[in-house]
Image 1 (cartoon, rainbow, N blue to C red):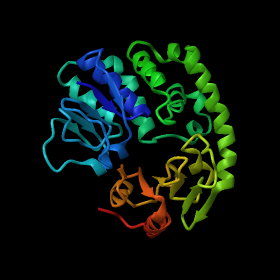
Image 2: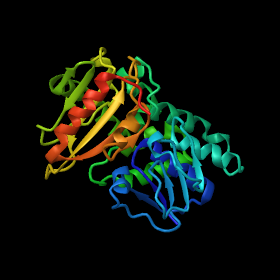
Image 3: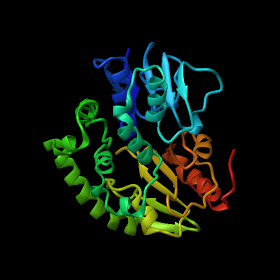
Image 4: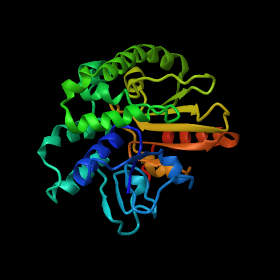
Length: 299
């Protein structure tokens, strides 16, 4: 039995809670959602799946993405909630397997994963401990697995002040602060407005820059939604598309998760992603932009 989750802050906190509730020695297997959507995921009988689409091999499944809402009863719990960690927390608190010492961690995960942020938090994430910590979690071809495992261990045992003093965490936080400053310039250079949508296209870059994913909403305040485009790998055979509602200009009525499910992806009402084959990616991106600009409610 393994925990199978994704490498983002919500996924890491899911792993923290599952280990606390079910056993500290449970191994963790890290995958991205598109591995399940494409049928290439290594999900074994008895695995506990969290913050990912459902897989028939899983013995328990916990999720909160509207595009993954099950058509049948599945062991575990599903709720359209701010975070998958919150779904797990409520499930195991009801069984007295988790207690209130994780309240703050789950509240912060809810806030970060649902992008319930203020302009000040977006401008200066370094002043908000959990937010800056979440920005140190990146997936560069799964090279950071030891760091993700380290965070799972620390978040299960230590307070946030102690975690931020850890030399590895401190180094990564300082790198994120520097990246965010440079990312602002990248956004200004590679983003255009297409009607009411900001489109950031990094396909011309050999190395895709990292940075504060919420920053675009403060730089392009007229946008009701953002689209970020980049290649999935060096072979440029696939294109990754991320779509989100503006967290400040809240006038987008499109259900992003439902829309992107039509393109093999998914997500929440307000944010999601999909992977497209490069040969016809632009055609599908144009369709996505047309849907966003029409700004009609989706099912």
